[in-house]
Length: 222
Image 1 (tube, rainbow, N blue to C red):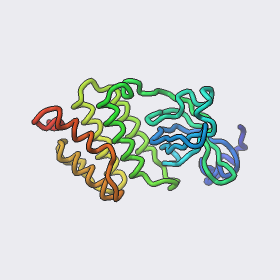
Image 2: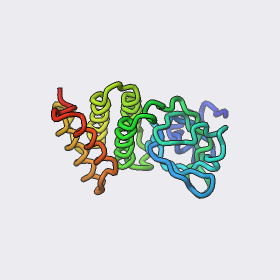
Image 3: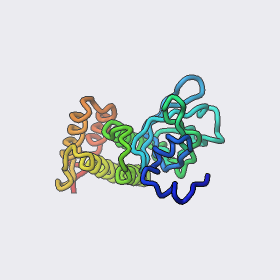
């Protein structure tokens, strides 16, 4: 796909503007949420560094291993080839995963904490703002990798706490970054997210069970 020098230097040559002109855009993406739609399609919400959070439809994703090797599942991180349909909806034509976080998917504690992180990002980050989301993308990417690689539940919990404190600070909800890490800070952060979104986090109760199961001592404390 070729552009003239004058076209690529235009200030309005953003990914959204490129899509508006009927051209495809490839961008790094993390899948926050995905669900079946009709017989073979998927609806998903993805986070990208340059376009923020967007909803996309993946046509025939459930039947094409060539275009969607991972079936476009939550936690997937890779490169998405995006286009814009005549209806104005964003379409994802192809998704090439860079890593699939297999350890996270086979461990219930890892899966629970990663689900909490993705659910929080999906609820808090506003959609279709067009704002640069590089910082949020990096926070999410690093936290999911940290949870995946952690060998102890305490380390997983700390990665979760860092992700959620960073998210709420970046989005101007609450700044608890100067507070010592602990279960109280995690609960305060989750309370702030629920107040901001005006709804309960579905995965919160399961996370509380993990904390309770570990020991009587604060598993997030120093």
